[in-house]
Image 1 (cartoon, rainbow, N blue to C red):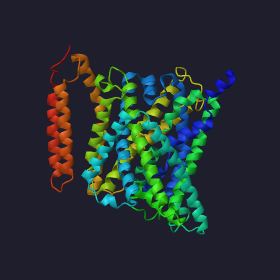
Image 2: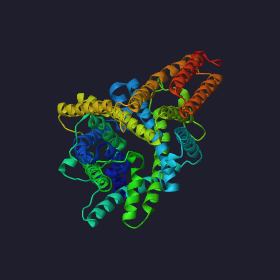
Image 3: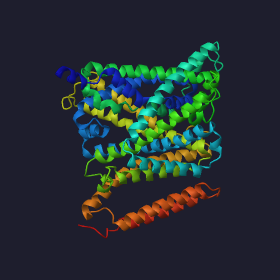
Image 4: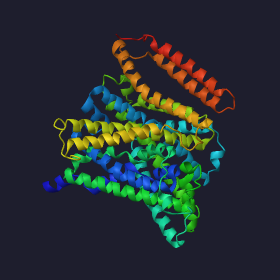
Length: 539
């Protein structure tokens, strides 16, 4: 009996492989990169999986083993190598990277519901940008309420959405190749030769590498389970190699399957937003099922993105307020309601999400907003991944101080060089990714997206430098701001966002100037109000 119980405590490498697989790749990731690179993305996937995913995963394994007692979180890795402040700032940047992802997930829910109810993309042409932003914002409020009153909502949504997503993705690849065989090898991509699979290494190609990294990162979430394996030294590498093989299979064959239904030389501009629906509609009609697969995919995507939004709102907010030092994180953000929910952290998340939505409201249409948010994820997420390679380099520079059960590359200098290589590649991809995608290069929209990309990065990362100052106010006065100050600041912010959204939806020629002036006035008033000593200061 003791032996049986002991065995039950271990995680087998096939189980860990499946856990990691769910956090790394999905059909949407394949769709996004297919639009960026066409059929040549098949070669890019193979290169990335071999030279990026495998070493990246094995580095994560060692980091998780070294810092297993601290929970294996990214911020705890950096805190363990470089101290409290850098650990806090890592936690902040990791959380900030989830903001565009959360907005994008909320956007996708709106798109999914439209398809699920109408079976077409026509609804997208019936709502303007302001309505799209308001509906997205409403999604945040709805899910905060759901998580407040239904404690197991996240687990239920994840079980339904995650399971259906994996089944639908594998089914698509299987049906696509079966259909290719039945049609005698007919493909929409013509002409199809070996040159079709060779990337064109120009500026556009290098600026899309960040999106590949965004699609492939995430395996650090399973790092804490390294020490729960029976033989981590041998079993964890097996799990990560198996993960790479599964990822190669799905990305390569999935991308090739898309080339069966879409002409890679003439890809629809809205493929990232609507491509999955188009392809399931085509597959459904090919097999005589009409729109059945389309509707099945729509509701699958609804549950999947609902689960993703719930996880991002809850898990990432909890991680930020619980995995950071008391010296830098304001006490009011740590405050929880009677159900244990970090309500003020939710408010901060929703406020920054509203800011991101506001920046995109000036883009021409709903598809441009969707693509821009997706590409913004391709900038910020790989940037945060740099912390992983930085931490790995630090533990290999002083390996005696950071012993672990599992070691990736026994030679410290060679391991350090591998970490440095991936750090440089990821950092370069992040910088290159700032260049806008899916729009005419150097056109007016291209320049606008470039500007809001930079603004988004500055605000999301820069705010992390402001919070320690707020924490110092709490230490100095007992409270950061009085109740009237909080009410005034939040009222100004909410009114400012509403006004800016309204102006953004109009056709006023100088609306950008008016919004800039209004934003400066609002920020100035907030600074004046917040700079004063709290009326109810206790110190």
